[in-house]
Length: 78
Image (cartoon, rainbow, N blue to C red):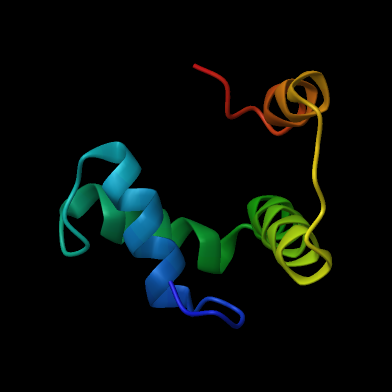
């Protein structure tokens, strides 16, 4: 991803990479279509995107415990 705000393609590629899918795969196409229509997911996605941008812009350092809580809160823990 670029130094500045990531593009939609960057984000979709990242999401699909983490799913083990190609950007043009049916699953990734479905995710993109869903994000375009679903206000709830769009708000959640924008919230995560803004959080990432905030941490990059202000070079925030989190303790391991705070990082773990943030990942759990965002539903990104495995």
